[in-house]
Length: 171
Image (spheres, rainbow, N blue to C red):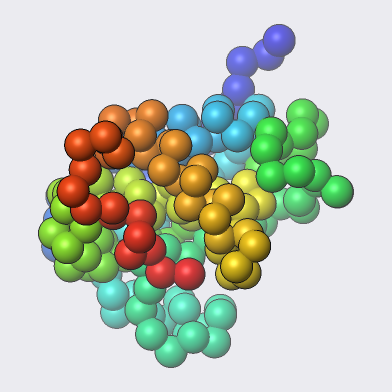
């Protein structure tokens, strides 16, 4: 079997927090592998609230900042289940992540801004992989998968947590 081929480009367009690019890249790679993706080209832009507000308004017609926006650029595989991603279908997408929101929301969720940023990246990648949280039926499946992934990444231990950081994710 051919090893996965991933290209992950990260552009840091904010100066609020230092970015752990290797840690972010490892987290994104982990999601891709766990979702069965064999080939991917992912661009990540780390921005402030002003920039993500502009993107949200321009592309989604939402007049507010948000935590992460995902843009799937490749054709999704036809009739596919959420996981695993079928072989032979490269995944191409973009994530825009608000570091401002991560810095602001991290403490109320009981962890660091860096962990909050990773959560947003995981959430965005799951959107690219076909998960959705816009309906009452789909949302629990996405939340379960997020919890599994951030636990695997060592960011969250449900047995000792006093706050559930996943409860605060915007939809």
